[in-house]
Image (tube, rainbow over all chains, first blue to last red; front, top):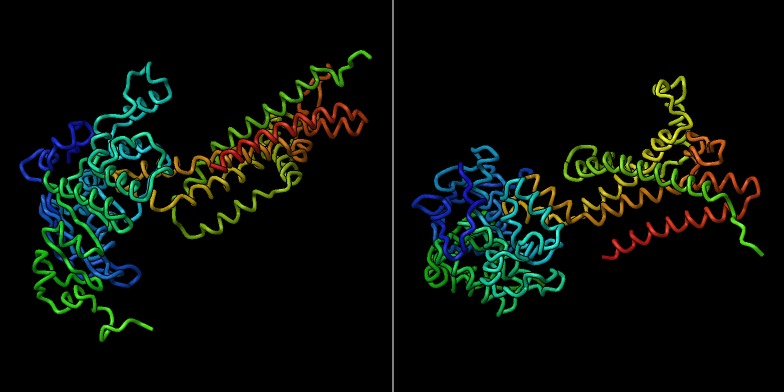
Length: 293
Length: 223
């Protein structure tokens, strides 16, 4: 497998998902009867779904339904205990670690809690690109950082990093310390970090759960711009309005089982499964709609 | 009243030089050994990990005289390393300080690596990092703790007296300069023979060194 990422330094907005593969087709994700369990406890049961390029699929479901596990499987953090995950028809877990890495590097993941490294914002954002560099290039970059910039001629921050930050409205924050960022800004930096590596599939685990409406709107716009560039987006959220606003399809997950997948209009207004209807109404968890004492 | 030096300057300089040479060399060697061990234990998940960690933590409190005795048995003529003729040499002192400092460096560095949030490792993996990248990024996050461990090891090495006295012998050359006499053993020696001014001057140097190291540790710890 060929990793095109190391040498590709084109501006983010000029690269589509198809450019990354070097072919005509951007990367598609398919889960085929995927199950996952730990110590005999099944967390996901025979999940089958497909994410097309240029599609935003939202995973909804109560806490503990297995949303995060599903996303971690999709982002190849964990290996399924049953079934198959396929990217462009290839099972990454049937490949060598190096070949699987090539696929992993076409996926971007954003977690619920922003986890920024103890380094300026720009270095947080460009880490995904730096890990793709060859070792000689890394050593050269390290040595250049030890010298005053006027000797090396290298810019303080490269345009690709600024562009990723601009997509989340933080272009001017490139030299800030992560400790000085608000929670919303930190999450936007996390998102910029995923975008900077130009992934073809974005896996987002409740990225706006702790954000105010303004920060949420900025991230949703960035997600939609990823879709415009043909990236597939798999997003877990508890925000039903968000799911309705930005999704092309919504998948309802309950107790590790995929109950229903469909367009937002169907899932929220005319669900085919009674359990989906009850969840959307907000009365799935408690019999007779009573809250626990 | 004319100024009277408290001791021969060459003597003081040689004692400080031997101390720093032995301790810095010991720290360099034990850092090379300790950090990979700390990182391997910190990143690996294996049966008996808690036991290994407990042994390392116990090593942080090794009595220095016992270590000195142990090293002396090893390097003495009848010991396994007897042929190297290391008794009463700076090299023997380096070995004993290595044994004393290594558990300190390993223990503190291990604790620093383990205290790095799992989210950092997940993030490093999620941006497309290899296992090496994940390890390097985790180490970078733990860097202040790792440096603190090295400095704490240096503090332990430079201020210990028992083992260097046993394996080094507190020897000075005929011209009065130090062969295996360190600041700590010189303080013991000078006090015993009533040269309190010299002992106090050496004590001040030692305290200044330890204060400097602790200041750096506190500064790093306060980040």
